[in-house]
Length: 180
Image (cartoon, rainbow, N blue to C red):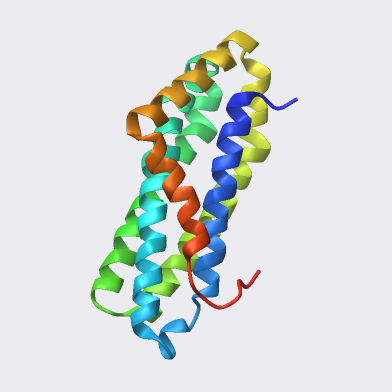
């Protein structure tokens, strides 16, 4: 059975993957409406920078990953370290996307966006299918509950209303139909 902690993090992954669908829907959109592409692409990278990085990755890096590393040093030196490095890669890709959008180089921005989303899908799969089930098995229920409430506290600290607004903002993206 999946813990409340895993359920929370997996639900956030679903929101992040939903944003990824919007990236693919914007493919070549700049060719017929560059202004709208720029607006929508900026909204998506803002969502990923705030929701995925500030809210989600922050909880993992400050709460979940250190707890897993303390519980199992081998895992901490392996998959956890790899996931942290991937978070850094996402931050760098986000900077590259922002730079290309600023330069109005939409083809390059889209290339980096799709690279970001492809890597993100693999990253999320590793967490959902390996890390979170492993965490659910190595921690006691009391430890899982404590980690869950620390994550809830982090959301409150960062702004739960802001988080909900971000989740609701995904419904406001305008674009072509998503490409799977």
